[in-house]
Length: 215
Image (cartoon, rainbow, N blue to C red; front, side, top):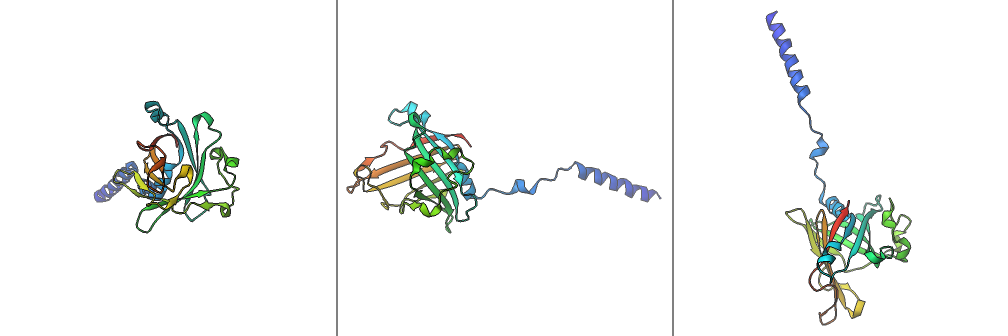
């Protein structure tokens, strides 16, 4: 009889201890995949105001990026528009980017343009931006994809390849883009070069530093 009561007491003690142990949610241990991580870094509103205050050769620019076409399975699609703060409602650059991960583990950000872009100015505020835009109306800027890799510190860096991105802006022959993407900031350096490899547009000192304003 004594042993019987000891067994019951031991069982109650074990049950009490188990009730006090917090079993972690398995989802908390699942790491976000790198493609989704990169997309999360890119989404949000960014500003170069701080840089423009320190160096007047840089303009105060606002950049908005918002995910679109959530149902597509051929990559993560992001709408981006860029404007001077003085005319924020009239962006001078509107693009669509498709993020994919390549077999070697690197990432490609393919660049697309679309007809009548100002029609969609401010659509980054929408829950589903450019929802009515037909994908068949996109024009890919071939050779202008930015290829990136993830660094040990969690940031992503990359650039276009060679002279493959054609450009005719200000007598340029080709353009290059270099990026550094972090959780709370992005550095983007776009430049144009003529047939003699002389820079004809873009900043000479370095890229624009965009600080993230929100998520």
